[in-house]
Image (cartoon, rainbow, N blue to C red; front, side, top):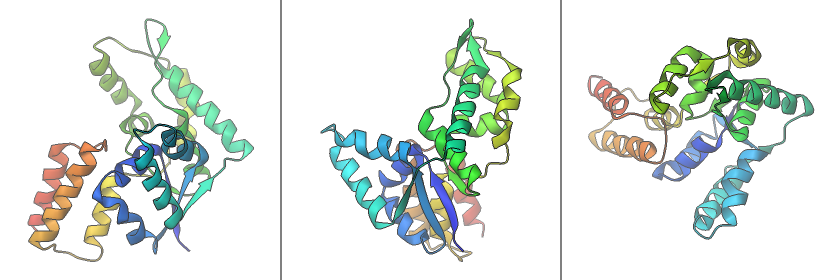
Length: 223
């Protein structure tokens, strides 16, 4: 039985904006793919209404249809969990008694669906990962971003803890798995394509640093 991957908007767009969109055809023998309705609306339906993004939305719609992706509707319980998590996450941090909205509905719904349906969540959202893994480090990151002291209401930590075992994979990890497959060594040309693809993901918005890319490529060179 195939393992399911549920994607949020950022990962779906990052992969389809680069030369890596064929990653889905490469992986569909091993995984099945799904996106929540909110992600489909955010990444396809709304952009279709804007001429600037219409072509990108059509390309993405074609990939979703051909892969194919399941367009997943949340159950009543999943909707309730989404509201609970979103409310708690966006009440956790504040500046001068004004809450910081750190998460959006589409990415939250994707996370809840992945957790409740025993699936992997494909997400490049650093905020979500830090929120689940180390909210205190996230506060430090936010303080650097805003240049102000940020208050944390720890009473909300328990309300987001039900997603603590969520399994998250990044777009870069999916891309690398396609290049490596069962290989232990890549040719010079394959490494060059992989490097270009990883940087394309980075510039498309994926949560990747130059240091992470270079470190990974150097580790391949040692194999």
